[in-house]
Image (cartoon, rainbow, N blue to C red; front, side, top):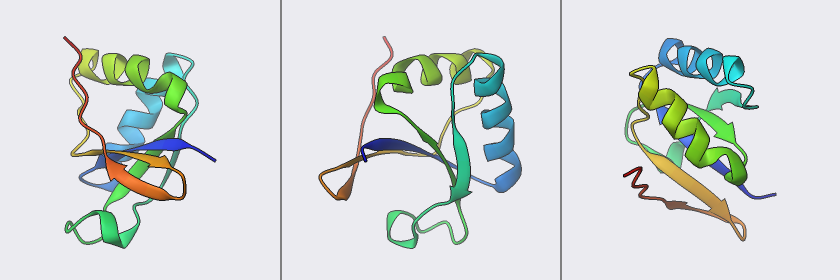
Length: 86
């Protein structure tokens, strides 16, 4: 199943991001980031549907919350996804 991951610097930050998305009606789930995606130790991530990524990033930017990295899960593997909101 395709999805996007928004990496957060801590579990608390990930929870703040999730609450902001919940208020905007965007479904997300917090969980530990796969180890091979980050060198941050026990990083956490929000999982969102690809169709919601742009809106999720706009909501987070409006709340002054920003992910450390963004990854797209496609065809069984993660790839870093750059995203320009301009």
